[in-house]
Length: 152
Image (cartoon, rainbow, N blue to C red):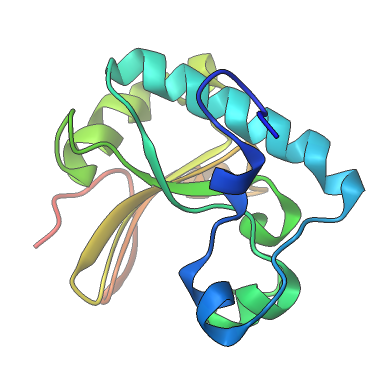
């Protein structure tokens, strides 16, 4: 099922962890409209970057979210978020640095540059966090910092 021109439901629900563990990662029907909004946000990001965007993690069913170590309040479990990379544009740092000043324009509620256990990606969500200081942050193994920071 295509959600937008470049993003499908299958792409936003693909999970190597779910496949490996034999877990169902099908979203409840009431979450599909949220996934459409997430895909629309990804389309705006894709247009801004001028290159394809790869979703490395999208929707996560509760058991899948638990298996990957996600928090119970994760935007992924509600259909609001996707972790992305855009190698054709540059590193996750370069992607996040471009997107940070455009979060409101692009309909990004939260932008997180993540560098955890040697892997890097950009987390984008349609949901705006309660604390505006958490709207654009960098998370590494050392913790969270406000803004987009250079990853080691």
